Image (cartoon, rainbow, N blue to C red; front, top):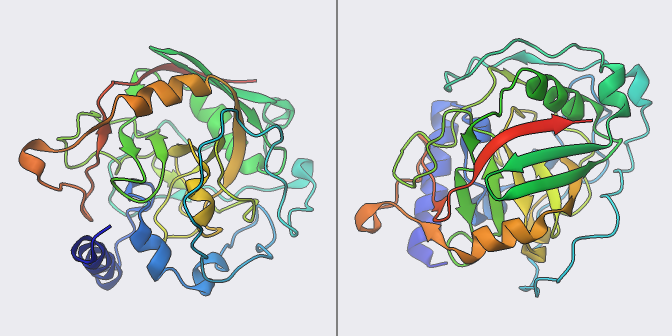
Length: 296
């Protein structure tokens, strides 16, 4: 990444901070978020879902790593503070008053449902096949939210709107979950949509290596999870700070993600960078349409 791009991204972040605007799930997770994130950013997790995370500190850069041929064999382990009994958790789902576009289908129940607590997988059924995510038991409020949204058909006929690679943004992620995104690389509001509510981080600490699926939010907007999530397709993302909720790992369908990645990134026309503090994203050239999401 050039110094010019890095300076531009940092300037964008500073503008967001000055305006006090929380775009939350709509932000691109870039190296700007890594270099500008302080230890306190990772320590500001609040709410009633889980105790504050035990791990913090400035992000540490890691050398580029080779993409493994298989997904991790185990789910991300819990942080040291993730000792709460999921059945006794009360979740804090609050109204999103940031002004971001919303597809509101109601609030999930504050007490995770029995079905959500028993859920083992989240299956994302796409036009390329099923991506099956094994869920961690350490994120009851996150799973409860996905189960609720899936039951409301919230994700039906949506797209994965953002593909960022080590070459374009310094990370390797496929991002989905914006119900209003077009995923064409030309829509300046892609990545700003959500369910109309936000909720706190959970289980911070595990690294975001290949196969890990985690919630997407701005690096400077802790506890602002909504409906957007990212699938890590390399170990390059181990450099990310512990600021994003890891809630599962892909156990089937990782080859689908790899095919999408191999297809390349569809940037804005004429090379214009539309990724800004108002939204926008680089989209996968191979369209990814989510037919439905099933949590069980």
